[in-house]
Amino acid sequence: MLRVVLGTVVTFAGALFLFVGCLGVFRMPDVYNRLQAGTKCTTLGAFLIAIGVGIIEPTWFWKTLVIAVFILLTNPISNHALGRASRKSGIPLCERSVVDRAQEFDGYEGRP
Amino acid sequence: MTEKADRTGSRARDIVYLFLVLLITWLMLTSSLHWQEVTTGAFLSLVLALFLARSYARLGLPPLSLVRLWRLGVYFLVLFAEVVKANIDVAYRVLHPRLPINPGIVIITTELSQDVAKVLLANSITLTPGTFTLDIQGDKLLIHWINVRSEDTAEATRLIAGRFEKHLKAVFA
Image (tube, rainbow over all chains, first blue to last red; front, side, top):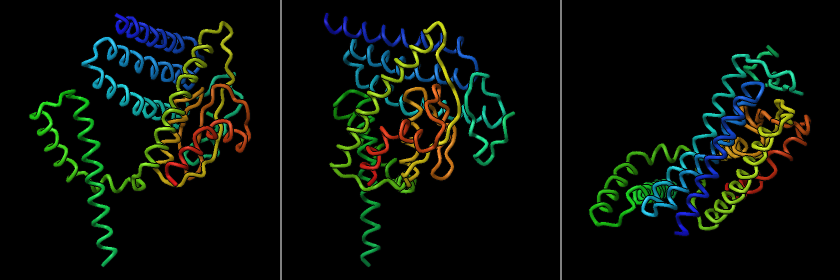
């Protein structure tokens, strides 16, 4: 019983983070800030949901743990690839941005 | 002669480590200690380890030791705490009616030299409060920061990478 309650709470927390992540994708002003919301919140969201399911159903726990670890390993890669491709192809930062030092790197042309 | 023996030794060690990692992953996925499952897993892990040991060696990982494993565990604990903080921080910014962001792209430097260490650092930065790595060139990392607190390279390095760098240095020392 306690296990089910704990698992449900963890899964619910995960769902909450996923919801905030989706909201962030709508609210943020440019692609880079959307990536921030879209990846940060989904990492913990998916992680907590996987772990929560594992707690409710103990025979699945190790499998869900492996899934969670793979999410933690791969999520940053997609974030990085999308951000890098966006900046390299010249998608502008939003007006509220305070600094853009990307020009100092090879292969990044000046502010588009 | 000793050099050759050394290389053979490190190759054997690579195979053993890879075998153990693969076998543990297999056991976690099957969640069963039935002898048939374990035998199949051990056989497949051994074959894969023999085939992949060369690419594993190319990663240039430092030799494994208990101290290193312990430090890696500490690092992962620090990382997990930071991940939770990052999520709460970004969730707060998203839910705040005025959207309190102050974004920008800054450059930080790292003292880590190995590629694997740099990748780990970049991934850790991506997972933590309001920062993600756009690119690595040499010892410089290009970072998008949702709330720029300093445009200065040294200061930004301290704020963003300081939390992880000393743990990673300990692991790869």
